Image 1: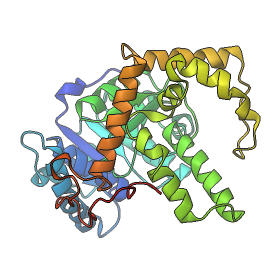
Image 2: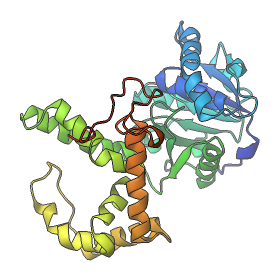
Image 3: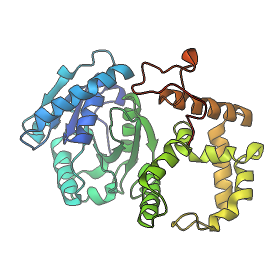
Image 4: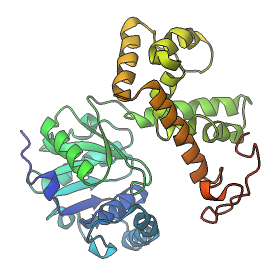
Length: 342
């Protein structure tokens, strides 16, 4: 059946959060900080106490990020039943444990209980919505809204529907998350694990291989990211970072120069064939991402970004206190030449 929204994304006033564990509780804190009324439900006997402690612990960080007008932990209500939790909700965020049959049953129950036209999002970290919406009477409004832990601090949410999801519901949810202060990726198609988790998983599996084979220690692996590419990924991502490795020739030169290394045994993953279609997709994608920024602009942005990250994490002194520890960074040591490198 076609999806007809009950309200606009901008008009949402009450959000229901179903499941109040680490992820669900993080969503609760985020929505409260954005000025929404939040109703939560979780079947655990001690769920309310744990939830309110989580919100209280998160609130100082949320105050630093900046609260919306009227934001308050007092706008949280914990309902005794699922039906009561969603009765007046304009949007529903489900964050139950990652068990497929549980998700199916819960989403079917939510689709039956929530008001018509209310989007229901799942925080699943890997299941396609197509696999979860099979028993729902109205699957058209069921979408994935995949956050990252903690949801009140990490901006990203990946949005995608299933085979029986109405495209209008996906568009509505993406707009709502945007209004609610998230950074949204609206996926064109379903992909197990979505985008960011697949990238994380590739890195994680290679790390496990290296430890298992005695090729690197856990400390080596973590330092290789925090002291290396992680500094650049924080603001530029792997594709534009690699494009800069091609100099003024950009991604095209990088692929032409380093493309043969895809056949080298640098990872246990099998590399795709670097044919003309893939090459063009990468080159065009980087050009689109760069927009009007020149190579010099991107280099300056990268360099300043790395400096900002190093300084923010206490590995460089503040500009106004060069050589002295920053009192705002706990445990920071005085800067000495070479102390930021390994």
